[in-house]
Image (cartoon, rainbow, N blue to C red; front, side, top):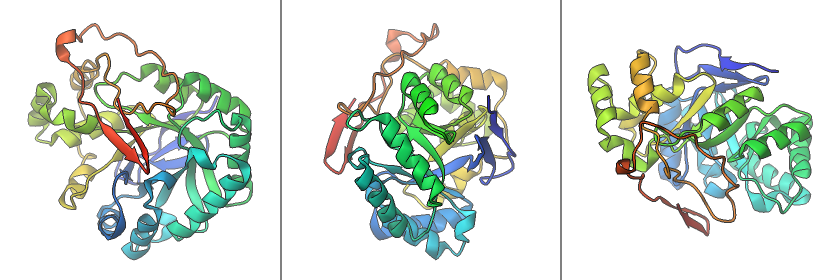
Length: 315
């Protein structure tokens, strides 16, 4: 069984080693941002120290990502790009054509990490993995993985892929216990890539996180990012539309959370706290382990409405 872990934890270029891939441990997420505003933000993000940019075909912003990386002045080889194939492109001819379009938009001749964005039964999973493998053999993609796969689908994908999977990207924040999926992902030698880390803003009013933030003289964003980063084999995606927050979100390598605080954040997990759950796309999610410390009085995180080019859902 492959090992997954941290190579170094000194800065944003610190890598999570996962089945041969070295994934920078903190990435800049680009969902919901477009055009010149995003391109400019990417320039500042890369110059601030981000070395991992996460995008997707369905986000409709790969061109802005490519422009921003090119304008940053940082060598392409020093920036790790993750993008994702959308479900309507899983058929063979569309798959390769869509990736070629992504390469053109991103202004690059290779993608560091290419993921299946959501599971889909419309095309056999064996074929989907075959298309990913073929792109690696063609030199267009360096590493492959999946996104939003439950344990059963992940295990099946591992069995079907000749090339080991580098990551499973899924929702993970203090209110959603993903212990079982994390364990399954890491047993496969893959890294966890956590998105929706701030639980659509719910973390900012949490009294437990406020108390911990005061103790370390850090922002709540920094505390949550550090909590994720401090878990072995976890890559975290940071997202902000404010230039001044870029360096703040990277300033999480000069402290460590004590075990008592790590545990206190774990205990925030509660029932019905999943935010991203699109009907027609989401798999049958793995049941979340009960949290004895949580009660019905805790409530749920607010419903998030997300629009992906005509795909509208709320949890």
